[in-house]
Image (cartoon, rainbow, N blue to C red; front, side, top):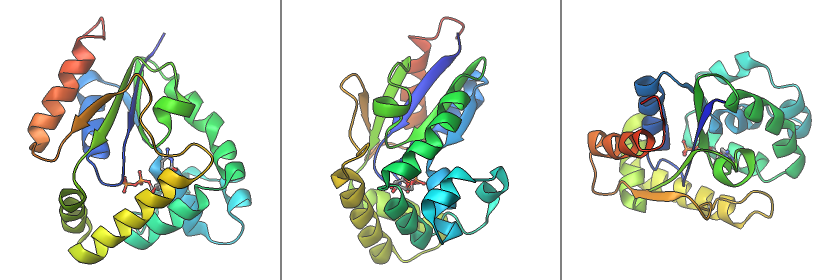
Length: 196
Ligand code: CDP
């Protein structure tokens, strides 16, 4: 049975960096589920149709990381039919051998409630805005406002809102370097993964 790691948390908290590092370290597959919603939002038009017809090439668009693409993603992500259309792809991905890391908002609560390890990654609003603004070359104050707006929408929606699973381990990366955050996450996997 494959090993499954669910990593959730608010925007730009470090989920992606930690997920990629864990996948690399343990030879697991990695799915950034936010890209699915970003790709649906970026297609424009009918989001439900876009989610049902999503093409893997849509995930390669170069403009998906922008603040605007994030806002569009968070708007379409509140539509239950959009989320439903993306469930099977994510659950199938989680079954890949020898294991998979999925990061998003509802991985530990909805997509993979049986995951072997669930991390809920957080950081202060200011630190998240600084990291994301540097990553995408955007204004920091504008990025802070965009992250807050997105977190509020993601937390308030009725379907699969942003929240920690009851059995998730919270990792606050506010005062941690990337290396420290990754080491902490690796230690959590090693204590659970028999082949580590
Ligand atoms: O990278 P960042 O944390 O800023 O965002 P993302 O993971 O790329 O997600 C973009 C948006 O997609 C989020 O603000 C959510 O609205 C939505 N999303 C979701 O609803 N469920 C997921 N599993 C992943 C993303």
